[in-house]
Image (cartoon, rainbow, N blue to C red; front, side, top):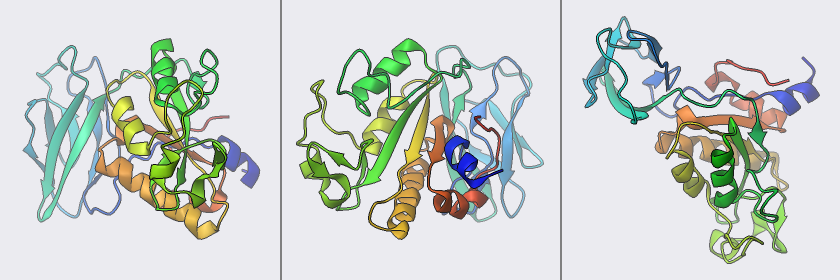
Length: 255
């Protein structure tokens, strides 16, 4: 596959946690089938569940599964499960896979009816209301290394990478919203399980290294929020994709 095609078309679910030994290769819970496999536990030894308040899950030969005699409860869509394997421990948020399959992704959110609301929380909420399969958004590092949303390298006359977050958040978008942080966007998106969050890692205008710093910080934020089940990643920076390739089991290509 040509590099340009890879940059423009690869859409990747990051299924592994980073900076931790214990990992999962999937965070989505299949629906409608008792005993279904959720994913494989990647660990140095035999894994077991140390805490599961839902009582829905079991581990067999390091494979996380739904119990055969348990059905997913109506209404609830995310469940925390703590897993241990020897000295390795991790707590994971699993999300019921009821995400829309219509393949419509709202670019910078759904903002056509609210001009000027691109990459805002309002555009995300509108994409969710419309039933889009995904809502794409763009992330940069501010000058004080905070994760902030903007499509363009400048917003409100300020260069995102050369402006601190507090100053960026004084900018009012045309629809009345302010510039959101990645954490705020994740908090909003994780309140539902119909629309995926398509996180675009923007190449830095300052240096290649800063672009990779952005990617590492964004992935760490997603991991810390336990938002892996909601996130797909995309980038036009080949070096970012190449650097983090080993984290990402390829499950899907968008062409």
